Amino acid sequence: MHLLFLHILVCINLVPSAIGKTIAGVFSSVAGRNTRGQYIGKFLYHGKNALLHCRLEDIQAAVEKEATLILFREHAWLNLHESENLSCLEHLSKAELTIALNQEENNQTIPELHFPQTWYVSYVDQHTCEEGDIIASDAIQFEIMMFNPDAAGNPLDHFSAEETGLQGFYFLLLLAYFVATCIYAQPLWQTMQKGGPMHTVLKVLSTALLLQAGAALFNYIHLSRYAKDGIGIPIMGSFVELFDMVSQIQMLYMLLSLCMGWTLGKNRKSQSKPLQWDSTPTSTGIALAAVITQGILLLWEQFEDTDHHGYHAHRSMAGLLLIGLRVSLSMLLASSLYRIITVERSVLKRDFYLSFAKGCFLWFLCHPTVVALSVVFNEYQREKIITIAVILCQSISVVVLYRLFLSRSLYWEVSSLSSVTLPLTMSSGHKSRYYS
Image 1 (cartoon, rainbow, N blue to C red):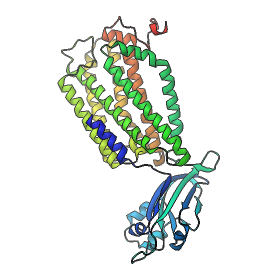
Image 2 (cartoon, one colour):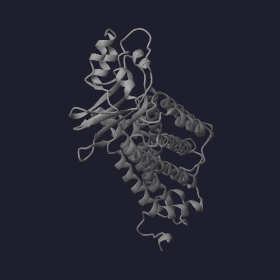
Image 3 (spheres, helix red, strand yellow):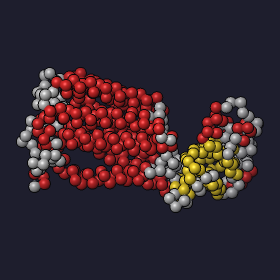
Image 4 (cartoon, rainbow, N blue to C red):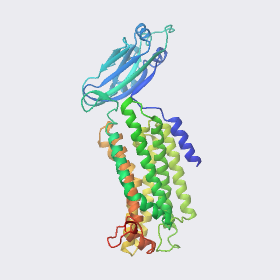
């Protein structure tokens, strides 16, 4: 509970309110002088007719100070920050676009782009490269909106190139969850009400699936609002991360408790009832140590990478350590499963173990594998591909484990519960009483 409470605090308080692309604030001559231009934000533009719109509250002060927005492409921006010998004027002269803020509303069309490119926006005025005290008023309130062309070519799309398509993906994901719930919710609930040796496993799987569905719903609501105003509901993005972290920790503890309790206690447990939640002290210690380690790394990643849309990308040191942890756990489970399968004589039980191994490995290895494969794609595509692929792999993993533990034939053979009638039967010769 303490770890969960800490996750909530981090997600709500540390994650910034938005990653773009309606930005409101105050232009500051002092900030501009200190950093050779006040950094405002960045946006991944693409296509033709992309637009930057800036609205000012005090146009007279902006004209007096010769207020200007300057835009750099990503390669020029990075080169400027690597060069330390440039003077202030030379630094500003490298801007590829300048927008004189001499009207209450200012529009700038971005040059046509054949592929998506990131543009960085800074504010400068006549005081940026001057020395001495700044006498003029220092505060000019502004609102900047950045737009990509929509399907009709009009500059009305708030989504940057790395975010396009995510709203549609979450809609389809929610539709799939809704259909599955309508079909399987009632028989699954009735099965869980009966109890039994797999009762805890089914509860954990169901909770993980609910967390995934809740995260998808919050993401869809946030992106739907974001599409209209460029701000969305940032607190929902924070709760999405919270749900994802709790789901990760819960599934990790379940899989390790089952696997390690099963393997460490194999010699003393009934061979007809493997994979039950009666972990040994050693297996519980291993599972708790892995869960605590993952929790610490997830929190560390939040401190290092405050852009919640980059959570799945694992671009920080903590993210790389998380990948290493998942690979190590997969190797540990693989070695244990191999020893069990090689001595098992029952073909049906070996199939049961192999199916369980597939579900476990898919959950543990989807992040490292997708992150490794994403390097072949363009940088603006990676985050989107990683997010979609990881969510789909985790959902498939849960489905594989559901089918395994709810399969009437395998469940009956392995658990010796022939008197229990289960839903979602995979045996064509038996019909569930819920559908009779």
